[in-house]
Length: 88
Image (spheres, rainbow, N blue to C red):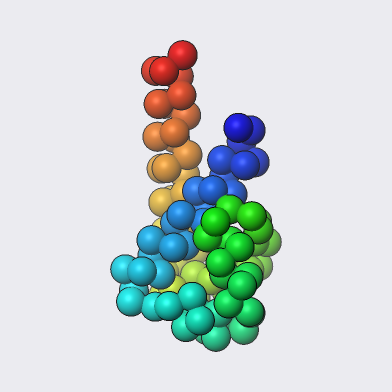
């Protein structure tokens, strides 16, 4: 799996985890971000890669600072890279 695919997966998992923690449905988040529910679903499963602008909108809907969101993504990416190196 290449870095771009890994990052898309991490972004999706992070959005989903925060959404669930906030008690929001995909429909709720979609409404907050003025997008279709299917768009949220596609992000969460790693099939869509949101633009930076859209990530800021998602963060607003999730009530999290973009810097905090990117830090969570970065931490997960580092963890995966470390596990990959240790498994080699």
